[in-house]
Figure 1 (spheres, rainbow, N blue to C red):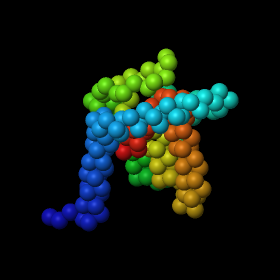
Figure 2 (spheres, rainbow, N blue to C red):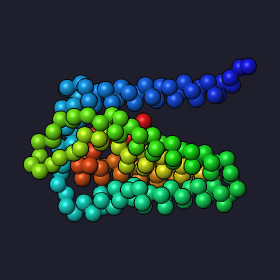
Figure 3 (tube, rainbow, N blue to C red):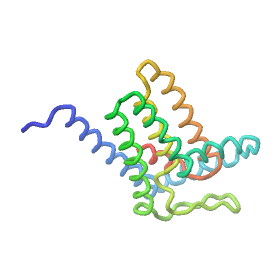
Figure 4 (spheres, rainbow, N blue to C red):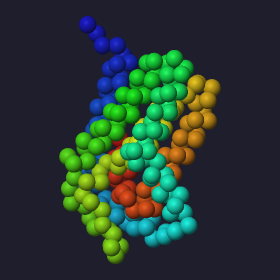
Length: 187
C-alpha cells in the first residue's frame, strides 16, 4: 500500500514544524546571546509605556483568554455548519482543539529558568513558552480563513492578520510574554 503524495507531504510538513519548534525552544532557553536578545526586545516594548493604548492591548489579550476565546472559536465552526460544510467544521474543531491543547501541554513540559527582565517589579513565570495567546489567535485566524466562503477569504485573511498582529503587539507591550514565547506560539 502506498501513501498518497499529499499525505506524505503533510507528514513531512508536520515533522519539519515539530523540528522547528524544538529549535525555537532550544534557542530561547539555551543559547545565551539569543536569550539576551529576547530580553532586550521585551524591555524595548516595555519602555514604550503607552498607557493610552494599554486598554486596547488588554482587550486583544482578553479576547484570547480561555473563557472568551471559546465563544470566538465557535463562530467559524458555526459558519461552516450553516454552510453545510461538515468536514470543514470538523477540521476547524480539530485545528482549534489540537493547536491550543498542544500548547497547554507543552507549557509545563518546557518550563525552565529564563533570564530576568531588568524592569523593577516585573516578573514572568518560567512556564511562558509557547504563548497560548499567540496559538489561540493564530489558530482562530486559520479557522476563520478555512471556514469562510472562498470569495471572502482575502478579506477574512487580511482582517485576521490584523487581529493576530494586534494580539502579538499587545502581549509584548503588556509584558505578558517573551518574544520567543510568541514565536513558539506560532509553531
